[in-house]
Structure formats: structure tokens, C-alpha cells
Image (cartoon, rainbow, N blue to C red; front, top):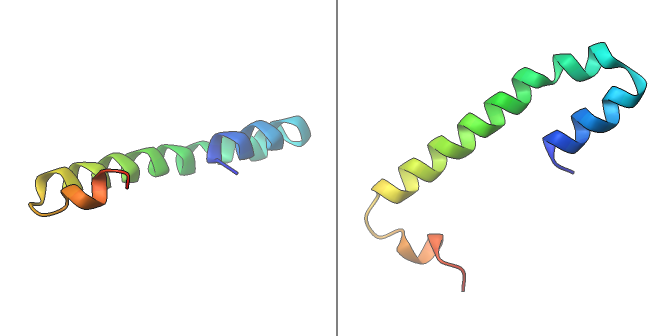
Length: 52
């Protein structure tokens, strides 16, 4: 389950709880972008980035 789906499902039950998950979603997006950037900048990681 993705973070976006978690927030969407939670919003049906408790809007406040869903809103409190927004910083977590932002952090996940930032962490993903940061990891991708680091992987692109490291030599020798081409095999990891390309699907088999």
C-alpha cells in the first residue's frame, strides 16, 4: 500500500488523522528523490538502476 493510498483510505474515517500523515508523505517523497539523486551520482550503480 502506498502512502497516498493510506492517506486516502484514512480520510474516509478520520480527516484529522489523514492530515497528520501528510508530513510523512512529504518525507517519503523527499527521501525517494534524495536516494535516486545519490544513486545517479555514484559510479558503478548503472546495473542497479536498470531493470534486468
